[in-house]
Amino acid sequence: MCASVLTAAVLAVLELGPAIAKKAFDASDAEVALMTMGQGAGMLLTFWTAHLASRHSQLALVFWPELLARCVLIATFFVQPGFALVYVLIHALAQTLQLMTMPARISVYRFNYPPEYRGRIVGRNRQLQLITTAILALLISEGLEACLEGGFLHRSFGMDVVPAVRLVIPIMATIGVAGSSIFRFIPIRAQDRSNNETAASLKKTTKHFVRIWREDHRFRRYQIYFCTFGFANIMSIPLTQIHAVDFLNADYPDMALINVVLVQGVMALTMPFWGRKLDRHSPLSLRAILNLFAAADYLIFAIAPTISWVYFGRVFRGIAFGGGSLVWMLGSLHFAKNRQDVPIYLGIHSVLTGARWLVAPALGVFMKKVFADDARPVFVLSATIMIVCAFLMMRDVKREKSNAESQ
Image: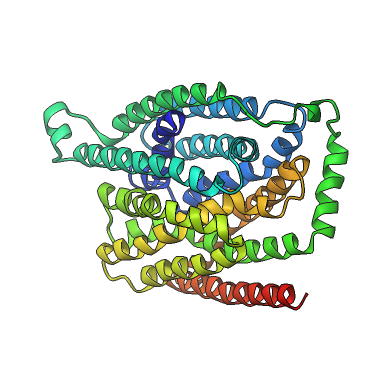
């Protein structure tokens, strides 16, 4: 729990990253897309992390990449005004290192928490982390707004936005180091240490990936749905930042509200509820419902005449992500047949997520150019795809229940 709270400091600056790039460093649309694509590289590297999980301590596979990610963020101290690309690359690399730890971290959850309570326990931990992240993001954004010309910090101390960013991000990264250090010494209660003696080669791990993908039809169908609606979602994510700043004139507090405070605040409120539901229902049925909430957010973005409309849409996104983040982290465990297969299932899920993160943001920015530099048609397209996938998933859930009852 303490490690989660301290890690929130890093999550706050990562969540605010695109907004800071756009407003403080005047990043271009392409640079904002590049920043979000850093998540894709991290997800792809989870293939390697999943392989190493059979040979090495899961705790070490979380600690060392996270430590390096925090050191990378500390380098923000040296970024000068006008060097948007440097800031973008620092942020993207930190995101990559942070996300590549996901299979190892989720394996720790699986080993330490019983399946009948796992969703609720992880949900409570994440709830506190989200609340802390939201509070820190709001404080950071208010501080940056006060550094603008006419703001309190600018008038009183001559502090400008970029120097403030160069101080705040390293401080938050240092707090994150403390969180990672605490996580490093968490005992793993049920880890099968015999895996270290029979660890597969990378070639065998790859064959294991392919075998599970080929033979587990339910899991493959689950991933195809995720790839489809996930691509549509990721395609619009950088556009929300661009549209909010360029067309809705959002300031720093606005960006904190729509990116972190509202989304993660509602996530924190709803996550225990979704955790209980995930313990009792299939991840496919929950994801179908969550898609409808996520689609509502993009539809509101498409019609919003002012930034205040987006506040309402972000509530829907918070509801969707409250359950969606748990389904993303724990849903693949629903399909794993044994403990040894857990990293492989998580790796497949993460690698496919990473592949779409590498492509979808750039495609979204390109489509915005096609639509006369207007992001709203892209928001409508993303929402439509998510709604269609939701109904297809509901159909599959009903079909599975019908087949189970007939047997």
